[in-house]
Image 1: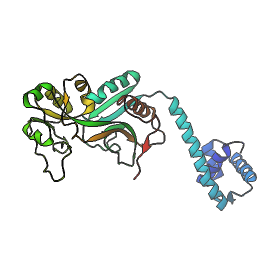
Image 2: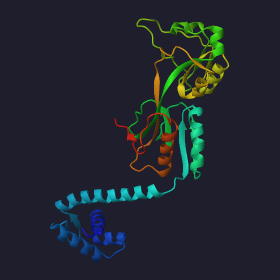
Image 3: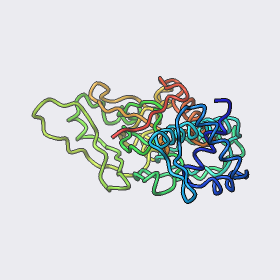
Image 4: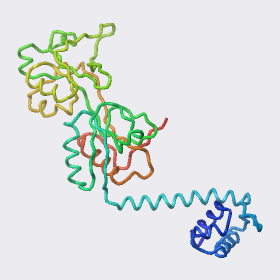
Length: 309
């Protein structure tokens, strides 16, 4: 067709069942609407409407053409929106839920604020499983595999859990050779705020061995306290590797039972699924993907996926 105008006029007539009403919505005369429909019918070689002095109704061919026309116009509207968002500067309030791992994300979020001064961050740090849609979050960062089919997800990177202690502690109390030896050591534990349960230390044991009953020398609900106390030689802590890279590299902390620790995890950023996420969400997702785990494998921008049931 020479112009998409014919599609627009046809859809308006089909939805209003009136040349007059369609013309009023389009800002043209009923006569102009009638001529446009007549040209369209002539070009297609079919009759699209049954006309009478009292009503305008679709023919079977018209009903089929209406379905296709709506899809075509919807695709054009989506393409226009995508292009306009691609050129728009990211701005506005961005509400983000993050886990209680400030050492992982705070430096990156500081860089994000400098890079996007027109975005206002509203940050909520919690390990509670928030409902992204119902609670009005623009994005969340969480561990584990996403399961909500209403959300899109981008993998940020993987981490390993480590058992660590300071050289001074190990010199004073000895180095555990087997997981069972931990029962004679000071253990620094994490309690999940949402359930009140202690985090289990996932350690490889022989089949049939009883579950370890570890001493609870200290319990807290964050990472920073366990790192601090381990550095002070107060016990052995079970921590994600990203939180202790520097102390491990410079020797202030030493790995313990490295061959027996078997838990790993994955971080994802998730946001409400949409064909065209807003510029501010796209900016955050791309920024976190490039910087939270810069040395790990990652997905290229735009490779996010929508969860399926």
